[in-house]
Length: 124
Image 1 (cartoon, rainbow, N blue to C red):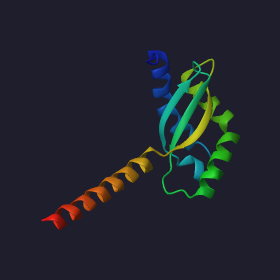
Image 2 (cartoon, rainbow, N blue to C red; image 1 turned 30 degrees about the horizontal axis):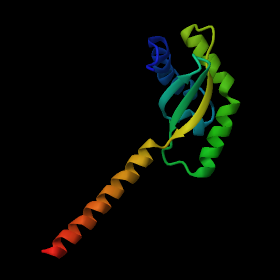
Image 3 (cartoon, rainbow, N blue to C red; image 1 turned 135 degrees about the horizontal axis):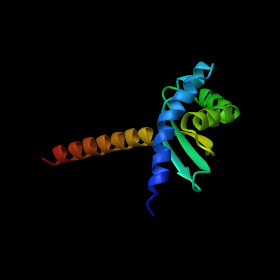
Image 4 (cartoon, rainbow, N blue to C red; image 1 turned 90 degrees about the horizontal axis):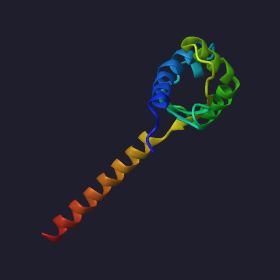
């Protein structure tokens, strides 16, 4: 079922507001994060926020997710004030792995292509 215009608008606004809210934080690990996408669910009560992994290692990712939980209320308040909303969704932060998956698939296709190229040239 397609999402309502209201929820799509909220997602779009949050994609713009969250990077601004993150930039207000004093932590350089958090203030430079890139929001890739926002997906609201349960009406507007929850929002999954997908972040770019950039070049973060596992330890840094763990740090980022832990500290984002701690500043969740600050981020919500920023969005409430900026938009004049009565309620702001609870943010659940995740790292977006889709780019990594796409790159993995591209490498597999390249490998298959080169294997096929080798076998067809061996037949001739």
